[in-house]
Image 1 (tube, one colour):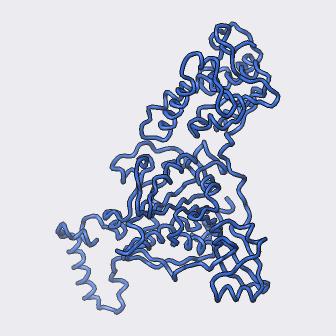
Image 2 (cartoon, rainbow, N blue to C red):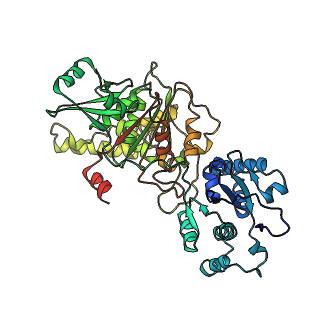
Image 3 (tube, rainbow, N blue to C red):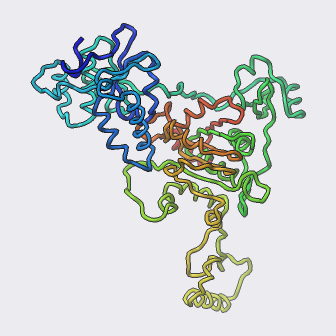
Length: 512
């Protein structure tokens, strides 16, 4: 069999069989999952040399997950391909497949003729682009070897270009979860009125075998009688459902009381306040209360010396919507503030600043003379110099310190940059990871493995709103984490459906 690299190269180890396929990997697949090399079973795996060049340009990114993934791939390939002979011939993997590095001979010798390359040059003539060269390498494999050749890439545009030149292409499917269930966010379990009354009085009820088999551990359900009476519950395993453990309200120190406004928010608050749940995932469209409730319940559990947690840590991926505004100046907190503004908004709602009293809203009437005298006093106070300490109360000429900012200054609420979380050990913290649907499964794993004993992590996001071009509604870190952790003793999941921000926000989330 003729080898891809020409007559001077040794014989290739690529298998030829009716049951075997050859997968050509794009760079983004290796960056997404460095272990993907070992996940193609007994098939041929081919990596174009252009991929090695792209990895080389990325490996220098010291503080990014991409840079770490690129360096990890390099180490794996160095172990699998220790010398030039292994690089050219390819090697057999432990799972029964093969691994080869592909060099396109038609780029070395442009006088050589190939129908596939002629078709590629007619459709995608610019071979200075790495994407087009990777497609060209896959076409050479397809032309020379009988097994079906498939280009695996997470770049949708590369998939489309590959199909345009007659090459089969697909996404990396190994970490994709099953299609998301678009039905109700919870199950309903029918009971008769006497069973429901017994549950209400005892706080627990044993389900039948059929109902219990359909539930997973810590799943939230609604018990409903034929008369329309309902009660929320949580499945504890062994066929037993129990009543939710909810306080009348939760409250941040110095803040206002917050209550659940619908059934799904009751589920969410129950899981947020249960210290036996160490990992909580939550789906919800805009305005359903993910940010506000998670922040309120976190602060509620960190406000005194007997609290479960020493403080609250908040983070989210730095992925812009629309055109990027470039680098941001200032300290880490100042750089992260635009991305964490939703939490500043939530803290402002939970711990509102007291508005200054205005004379025009005085309860009793005053004479015009007294009113004029009061206005003159206020004008004099505004124009006269104020001592430096006056700004601390919000009445001086210095910046007003909002109540929630004291939590940030004291460290009770801290901002975590995901870029610097590797290597940390986060103990006794309530960790909120917002917009988790923007992360890859590997990135979510990196964050969760930082959580120590006594800590809790909450992953929230909307799988329908993804700006990261390399993940989708079935392969992002939020849905992957829920799918893999579902049914574990220390994990729970809630799906919020009803918007509570405003009627306008609810209509926009549903219709636009």
